[in-house]
Length: 382
Image (cartoon, rainbow, N blue to C red; front, top):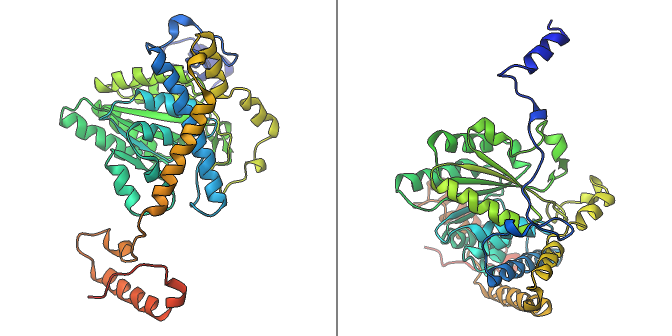
Protein backbone atom coordinates (compact mmCIF):
# COMPACT_ATOMS: atom_id res chain seq x y z
CA UNK A 1 0.00 0.00 0.00
CA UNK A 2 1.43 3.37 -1.05
CA UNK A 3 2.60 5.65 1.74
CA UNK A 4 1.82 9.35 2.05
CA UNK A 5 5.37 10.14 0.97
CA UNK A 6 4.82 8.24 -2.30
CA UNK A 7 1.76 10.38 -3.06
CA UNK A 8 3.64 13.58 -2.23
CA UNK A 9 6.58 12.54 -4.41
CA UNK A 10 4.28 11.90 -7.37
CA UNK A 11 2.53 15.23 -6.92
CA UNK A 12 5.78 17.06 -7.53
CA UNK A 13 6.55 15.23 -10.78
CA UNK A 14 5.23 15.48 -14.36
CA UNK A 15 2.26 13.30 -15.15
CA UNK A 16 0.30 13.93 -11.96
CA UNK A 17 -2.89 15.95 -12.42
CA UNK A 18 -4.78 17.54 -9.57
CA UNK A 19 -8.09 19.36 -9.29
CA UNK A 20 -6.25 21.97 -7.27
CA UNK A 21 -4.29 22.97 -10.36
CA UNK A 22 -7.45 24.02 -12.23
CA UNK A 23 -8.87 27.55 -11.82
CA UNK A 24 -12.43 28.35 -10.78
CA UNK A 25 -12.45 31.76 -12.45
CA UNK A 26 -15.08 32.68 -15.06
CA UNK A 27 -14.66 35.13 -17.90
CA UNK A 28 -16.47 38.34 -17.05
CA UNK A 29 -16.93 41.81 -18.55
CA UNK A 30 -19.57 43.37 -16.28
CA UNK A 31 -19.40 42.58 -12.56
CA UNK A 32 -22.57 42.01 -10.50
CA UNK A 33 -22.38 45.58 -9.16
CA UNK A 34 -22.37 46.99 -12.72
CA UNK A 35 -18.68 47.92 -12.82
CA UNK A 36 -16.74 46.84 -15.87
CA UNK A 37 -13.48 46.96 -17.76
CA UNK A 38 -14.05 49.30 -20.72
CA UNK A 39 -11.28 47.59 -22.70
CA UNK A 40 -13.11 44.25 -22.44
CA UNK A 41 -16.44 45.45 -23.88
CA UNK A 42 -17.19 43.61 -27.17
CA UNK A 43 -17.12 45.52 -30.43
CA UNK A 44 -20.84 46.33 -30.65
CA UNK A 45 -22.21 49.75 -31.56
CA UNK A 46 -24.75 51.55 -29.40
CA UNK A 47 -27.68 50.04 -31.27
CA UNK A 48 -26.29 46.54 -30.83
CA UNK A 49 -25.71 47.09 -27.11
CA UNK A 50 -29.26 48.32 -26.53
CA UNK A 51 -30.65 45.57 -28.74
CA UNK A 52 -29.26 42.96 -26.34
CA UNK A 53 -31.40 44.46 -23.58
CA UNK A 54 -34.56 44.18 -25.66
CA UNK A 55 -33.88 40.53 -26.44
CA UNK A 56 -33.40 39.78 -22.75
CA UNK A 57 -36.72 41.46 -21.96
CA UNK A 58 -38.33 39.35 -24.69
CA UNK A 59 -36.86 36.17 -23.19
CA UNK A 60 -38.12 37.02 -19.70
CA UNK A 61 -41.55 38.08 -20.97
CA UNK A 62 -41.95 34.94 -23.08
CA UNK A 63 -41.08 32.72 -20.10
CA UNK A 64 -43.40 34.54 -17.71
CA UNK A 65 -46.30 34.51 -20.17
CA UNK A 66 -45.79 30.83 -21.03
CA UNK A 67 -45.85 29.83 -17.36
CA UNK A 68 -49.14 31.70 -16.95
CA UNK A 69 -50.55 29.94 -20.02
CA UNK A 70 -49.55 26.59 -18.57
CA UNK A 71 -51.29 27.41 -15.29
CA UNK A 72 -54.44 28.12 -17.28
CA UNK A 73 -54.13 24.84 -19.16
CA UNK A 74 -53.37 26.47 -22.52
CA UNK A 75 -49.95 24.86 -23.03
CA UNK A 76 -48.35 21.68 -21.71
CA UNK A 77 -45.43 21.41 -19.33
CA UNK A 78 -43.03 24.32 -19.85
CA UNK A 79 -39.39 24.86 -18.89
CA UNK A 80 -38.70 28.51 -18.07
CA UNK A 81 -35.35 30.19 -18.58
CA UNK A 82 -36.01 33.03 -16.12
CA UNK A 83 -32.71 34.07 -14.60
CA UNK A 84 -30.76 32.75 -17.59
CA UNK A 85 -31.57 35.61 -19.99
CA UNK A 86 -27.97 36.77 -20.39
CA UNK A 87 -26.77 33.23 -21.10
CA UNK A 88 -29.48 32.58 -23.68
CA UNK A 89 -29.39 35.94 -25.45
CA UNK A 90 -25.65 36.53 -25.32
CA UNK A 91 -24.92 33.16 -26.92
CA UNK A 92 -27.73 33.35 -29.47
CA UNK A 93 -26.71 36.86 -30.53
CA UNK A 94 -23.25 35.55 -31.49
CA UNK A 95 -24.50 32.80 -33.81
CA UNK A 96 -24.64 33.25 -37.57
CA UNK A 97 -27.76 33.02 -39.70
CA UNK A 98 -26.66 29.69 -41.21
CA UNK A 99 -25.65 28.08 -37.94
CA UNK A 100 -27.65 25.21 -36.49
CA UNK A 101 -29.02 25.42 -32.95
CA UNK A 102 -29.94 22.13 -31.31
CA UNK A 103 -31.23 22.65 -27.82
CA UNK A 104 -33.11 21.16 -24.89
CA UNK A 105 -35.94 23.68 -24.51
CA UNK A 106 -34.59 26.60 -22.50
CA UNK A 107 -33.28 28.68 -25.42
CA UNK A 108 -36.35 30.63 -26.57
CA UNK A 109 -34.70 33.95 -27.45
CA UNK A 110 -31.73 32.23 -29.10
CA UNK A 111 -34.21 30.47 -31.38
CA UNK A 112 -36.05 33.71 -32.08
CA UNK A 113 -32.72 35.26 -33.05
CA UNK A 114 -32.38 32.45 -35.61
CA UNK A 115 -35.67 33.56 -37.15
CA UNK A 116 -38.17 31.29 -35.40
CA UNK A 117 -41.55 33.03 -34.95
CA UNK A 118 -42.89 33.14 -31.40
CA UNK A 119 -46.04 31.40 -32.63
CA UNK A 120 -44.13 28.29 -33.64
CA UNK A 121 -42.54 27.87 -30.22
CA UNK A 122 -45.94 28.26 -28.56
CA UNK A 123 -47.22 25.54 -30.88
CA UNK A 124 -44.32 23.30 -29.88
CA UNK A 125 -45.17 23.56 -26.19
CA UNK A 126 -48.78 22.86 -27.07
CA UNK A 127 -47.69 19.56 -28.58
CA UNK A 128 -48.71 20.42 -32.13
CA UNK A 129 -47.02 17.83 -34.38
CA UNK A 130 -46.31 20.40 -37.10
CA UNK A 131 -44.15 22.40 -34.68
CA UNK A 132 -41.19 20.07 -35.15
CA UNK A 133 -41.29 20.67 -38.88
CA UNK A 134 -41.54 24.42 -38.31
CA UNK A 135 -38.46 24.39 -36.09
CA UNK A 136 -36.54 22.31 -38.62
CA UNK A 137 -37.11 24.96 -41.28
CA UNK A 138 -34.80 27.20 -39.23
CA UNK A 139 -32.19 24.50 -38.52
CA UNK A 140 -33.47 24.21 -34.97
CA UNK A 141 -34.31 21.28 -32.74
CA UNK A 142 -35.52 20.77 -29.17
CA UNK A 143 -34.62 17.45 -27.52
CA UNK A 144 -36.58 16.86 -24.33
CA UNK A 145 -34.73 13.58 -23.75
CA UNK A 146 -31.82 14.83 -21.66
CA UNK A 147 -28.49 14.88 -23.51
CA UNK A 148 -29.71 12.70 -26.37
CA UNK A 149 -29.09 15.36 -29.03
CA UNK A 150 -25.35 15.77 -28.50
CA UNK A 151 -24.35 12.95 -30.90
CA UNK A 152 -26.78 14.47 -33.41
CA UNK A 153 -25.03 17.82 -33.07
CA UNK A 154 -21.72 16.17 -33.90
CA UNK A 155 -23.39 14.46 -36.86
CA UNK A 156 -24.68 17.78 -38.16
CA UNK A 157 -21.22 19.31 -37.66
CA UNK A 158 -19.65 16.40 -39.53
CA UNK A 159 -21.99 17.07 -42.44
CA UNK A 160 -20.93 20.72 -42.37
CA UNK A 161 -17.28 19.71 -42.41
CA UNK A 162 -17.80 17.35 -45.35
CA UNK A 163 -19.71 19.98 -47.32
CA UNK A 164 -17.08 22.64 -46.48
CA UNK A 165 -19.75 24.88 -44.96
CA UNK A 166 -18.75 27.99 -43.00
CA UNK A 167 -21.53 27.36 -40.48
CA UNK A 168 -21.25 25.68 -37.09
CA UNK A 169 -23.55 23.44 -35.07
CA UNK A 170 -24.33 24.69 -31.58
CA UNK A 171 -25.51 22.28 -28.89
CA UNK A 172 -27.37 23.77 -25.93
CA UNK A 173 -27.66 21.58 -22.83
CA UNK A 174 -27.73 21.82 -19.06
CA UNK A 175 -25.40 20.68 -16.32
CA UNK A 176 -27.65 17.68 -15.74
CA UNK A 177 -27.20 16.53 -19.32
CA UNK A 178 -23.43 16.67 -18.86
CA UNK A 179 -23.78 13.60 -16.64
CA UNK A 180 -25.17 11.49 -19.49
CA UNK A 181 -23.18 9.15 -21.71
CA UNK A 182 -24.56 10.71 -24.88
CA UNK A 183 -22.90 14.03 -24.06
CA UNK A 184 -19.54 12.31 -23.65
CA UNK A 185 -20.01 10.45 -26.93
CA UNK A 186 -21.02 13.57 -28.83
CA UNK A 187 -18.16 15.75 -27.58
CA UNK A 188 -15.54 13.03 -27.92
CA UNK A 189 -16.67 12.34 -31.50
CA UNK A 190 -16.38 16.02 -32.40
CA UNK A 191 -12.94 16.17 -30.85
CA UNK A 192 -11.69 13.11 -32.72
CA UNK A 193 -12.80 14.50 -36.09
CA UNK A 194 -12.11 18.22 -35.47
CA UNK A 195 -15.71 19.16 -36.20
CA UNK A 196 -17.24 22.68 -36.30
CA UNK A 197 -19.27 22.23 -33.12
CA UNK A 198 -19.87 24.42 -30.07
CA UNK A 199 -21.10 22.64 -26.95
CA UNK A 200 -22.81 25.32 -24.88
CA UNK A 201 -23.68 24.15 -21.39
CA UNK A 202 -25.94 26.35 -19.30
CA UNK A 203 -24.85 25.38 -15.82
CA UNK A 204 -27.92 26.61 -13.95
CA UNK A 205 -26.82 24.76 -10.79
CA UNK A 206 -29.47 22.03 -10.82
CA UNK A 207 -30.28 18.87 -12.77
CA UNK A 208 -33.95 19.07 -11.83
CA UNK A 209 -33.50 18.62 -8.06
CA UNK A 210 -29.86 17.47 -7.96
CA UNK A 211 -27.39 20.26 -7.29
CA UNK A 212 -24.24 20.62 -9.37
CA UNK A 213 -22.05 19.64 -6.41
CA UNK A 214 -23.84 16.28 -6.16
CA UNK A 215 -23.50 15.53 -9.86
CA UNK A 216 -19.74 15.52 -10.20
CA UNK A 217 -16.47 15.75 -8.36
CA UNK A 218 -15.13 18.17 -10.96
CA UNK A 219 -14.74 21.77 -9.87
CA UNK A 220 -16.06 23.04 -13.22
CA UNK A 221 -17.58 21.61 -16.37
CA UNK A 222 -15.28 23.66 -18.62
CA UNK A 223 -12.27 21.74 -17.31
CA UNK A 224 -13.58 18.59 -19.02
CA UNK A 225 -12.59 20.15 -22.33
CA UNK A 226 -8.96 19.36 -21.48
CA UNK A 227 -9.75 15.66 -21.25
CA UNK A 228 -11.50 15.75 -24.62
CA UNK A 229 -8.60 17.59 -26.21
CA UNK A 230 -10.67 20.63 -27.15
CA UNK A 231 -10.88 24.26 -26.11
CA UNK A 232 -12.83 25.17 -22.96
CA UNK A 233 -14.32 28.47 -21.82
CA UNK A 234 -15.95 29.17 -18.45
CA UNK A 235 -18.03 32.33 -18.54
CA UNK A 236 -20.24 34.29 -16.15
CA UNK A 237 -23.64 33.36 -17.55
CA UNK A 238 -25.37 36.37 -15.98
CA UNK A 239 -23.12 38.78 -17.90
CA UNK A 240 -24.60 39.11 -21.39
CA UNK A 241 -21.52 40.82 -22.83
CA UNK A 242 -19.16 38.15 -21.50
CA UNK A 243 -21.38 35.38 -22.89
CA UNK A 244 -21.57 37.11 -26.27
CA UNK A 245 -17.78 37.47 -26.32
CA UNK A 246 -17.23 33.86 -25.28
CA UNK A 247 -19.66 32.52 -27.87
CA UNK A 248 -18.12 34.65 -30.61
CA UNK A 249 -14.70 33.21 -29.75
CA UNK A 250 -16.12 29.68 -29.56
CA UNK A 251 -17.85 30.06 -32.92
CA UNK A 252 -14.67 31.34 -34.56
CA UNK A 253 -12.62 28.42 -33.22
CA UNK A 254 -15.30 25.88 -34.21
CA UNK A 255 -15.44 27.24 -37.75
CA UNK A 256 -11.72 26.44 -37.97
CA UNK A 257 -12.34 22.83 -36.95
CA UNK A 258 -11.61 23.34 -33.27
CA UNK A 259 -14.61 22.23 -31.19
CA UNK A 260 -15.28 24.20 -28.02
CA UNK A 261 -16.98 23.42 -24.71
CA UNK A 262 -18.48 26.52 -23.10
CA UNK A 263 -19.72 26.45 -19.52
CA UNK A 264 -22.06 29.37 -18.88
CA UNK A 265 -22.48 29.67 -15.11
CA UNK A 266 -25.98 30.95 -14.38
CA UNK A 267 -29.05 30.14 -12.25
CA UNK A 268 -32.53 28.82 -12.90
CA UNK A 269 -34.77 31.05 -10.80
CA UNK A 270 -37.98 29.26 -11.79
CA UNK A 271 -38.79 25.59 -11.37
CA UNK A 272 -37.13 23.03 -13.62
CA UNK A 273 -40.47 22.84 -15.40
CA UNK A 274 -44.00 23.76 -14.43
CA UNK A 275 -44.32 20.22 -13.03
CA UNK A 276 -41.55 20.83 -10.49
CA UNK A 277 -41.55 22.31 -6.96
CA UNK A 278 -38.08 23.78 -6.32
CA UNK A 279 -38.89 24.65 -2.70
CA UNK A 280 -38.40 20.96 -1.94
CA UNK A 281 -34.70 21.01 -2.70
CA UNK A 282 -33.29 24.54 -2.46
CA UNK A 283 -33.35 27.26 0.16
CA UNK A 284 -34.96 30.69 -0.21
CA UNK A 285 -31.68 32.31 0.80
CA UNK A 286 -29.97 30.80 -2.22
CA UNK A 287 -32.65 32.04 -4.59
CA UNK A 288 -32.49 35.51 -3.04
CA UNK A 289 -28.70 35.56 -3.44
CA UNK A 290 -28.99 34.87 -7.17
CA UNK A 291 -31.77 37.43 -7.55
CA UNK A 292 -29.17 40.00 -6.51
CA UNK A 293 -27.20 38.94 -9.61
CA UNK A 294 -30.17 39.54 -11.94
CA UNK A 295 -28.81 39.73 -15.52
CA UNK A 296 -31.19 42.50 -16.63
CA UNK A 297 -30.41 44.71 -13.64
CA UNK A 298 -26.70 44.19 -14.16
CA UNK A 299 -26.90 45.09 -17.83
CA UNK A 300 -29.05 48.14 -17.12
CA UNK A 301 -26.27 49.40 -14.81
CA UNK A 302 -23.79 48.96 -17.65
CA UNK A 303 -25.98 50.83 -20.13
CA UNK A 304 -26.40 53.69 -17.66
CA UNK A 305 -22.63 53.91 -17.18
CA UNK A 306 -22.14 53.98 -20.96
CA UNK A 307 -24.72 56.75 -21.33
CA UNK A 308 -26.95 54.48 -23.41
CA UNK A 309 -29.88 54.05 -21.02
CA UNK A 310 -31.47 57.25 -22.31
CA UNK A 311 -31.83 55.44 -25.66
CA UNK A 312 -33.78 52.66 -23.98
CA UNK A 313 -37.47 53.13 -23.28
CA UNK A 314 -37.96 50.21 -20.90
CA UNK A 315 -41.73 50.70 -20.60
CA UNK A 316 -42.14 50.86 -24.38
CA UNK A 317 -40.02 47.72 -24.84
CA UNK A 318 -42.10 45.82 -22.29
CA UNK A 319 -45.32 46.92 -23.96
CA UNK A 320 -43.95 46.05 -27.41
CA UNK A 321 -42.84 42.53 -26.50
CA UNK A 322 -46.14 41.82 -24.75
CA UNK A 323 -47.97 42.91 -27.89
CA UNK A 324 -45.67 40.65 -29.91
CA UNK A 325 -46.54 37.75 -27.62
CA UNK A 326 -50.26 38.54 -27.86
CA UNK A 327 -50.09 38.46 -31.65
CA UNK A 328 -48.17 35.17 -31.57
CA UNK A 329 -50.70 33.66 -29.18
CA UNK A 330 -53.60 34.74 -31.40
CA UNK A 331 -51.84 33.14 -34.38
CA UNK A 332 -51.27 29.95 -32.40
CA UNK A 333 -54.94 29.88 -31.39
CA UNK A 334 -55.90 30.21 -35.07
CA UNK A 335 -53.63 27.36 -36.15
CA UNK A 336 -55.79 24.50 -37.47
CA UNK A 337 -56.10 21.45 -35.25
CA UNK A 338 -54.36 18.33 -36.46
CA UNK A 339 -56.43 15.37 -37.48
CA UNK A 340 -56.03 12.22 -35.43
CA UNK A 341 -54.57 10.41 -38.42
CA UNK A 342 -51.47 12.58 -38.09
CA UNK A 343 -50.38 10.57 -35.06
CA UNK A 344 -50.19 7.46 -37.27
CA UNK A 345 -49.27 8.72 -40.71
CA UNK A 346 -46.49 11.27 -40.18
CA UNK A 347 -43.88 8.83 -38.90
CA UNK A 348 -43.43 6.60 -41.99
CA UNK A 349 -43.54 7.24 -45.73
CA UNK A 350 -45.70 4.12 -46.01
CA UNK A 351 -47.91 3.15 -43.09
CA UNK A 352 -46.85 -0.26 -41.67
CA UNK A 353 -49.62 -2.87 -41.38
CA UNK A 354 -49.67 -2.84 -37.58
CA UNK A 355 -50.19 0.95 -37.52
CA UNK A 356 -52.84 0.68 -40.23
CA UNK A 357 -54.71 -1.76 -37.98
CA UNK A 358 -54.38 0.57 -35.00
CA UNK A 359 -55.67 3.48 -37.07
CA UNK A 360 -58.73 1.49 -38.12
CA UNK A 361 -59.36 0.53 -34.52
CA UNK A 362 -59.04 4.12 -33.40
CA UNK A 363 -61.43 5.33 -36.09
CA UNK A 364 -63.95 2.75 -34.93
CA UNK A 365 -63.47 3.90 -31.36
CA UNK A 366 -64.10 7.52 -32.34
CA UNK A 367 -67.23 6.54 -34.24
CA UNK A 368 -68.53 4.78 -31.14
CA UNK A 369 -67.81 7.72 -28.84
CA UNK A 370 -68.67 10.88 -30.81
CA UNK A 371 -69.88 12.75 -27.72
CA UNK A 372 -66.41 12.60 -26.13
CA UNK A 373 -64.35 13.30 -29.25
CA UNK A 374 -66.54 15.53 -31.39
CA UNK A 375 -63.92 18.28 -31.23
CA UNK A 376 -61.36 16.10 -33.08
CA UNK A 377 -61.24 16.60 -36.81
CA UNK A 378 -61.17 13.40 -38.87
CA UNK A 379 -60.64 12.62 -42.51
CA UNK A 380 -63.27 10.59 -44.36
CA UNK A 381 -62.57 6.87 -44.34
CA UNK A 382 -61.05 5.31 -47.43
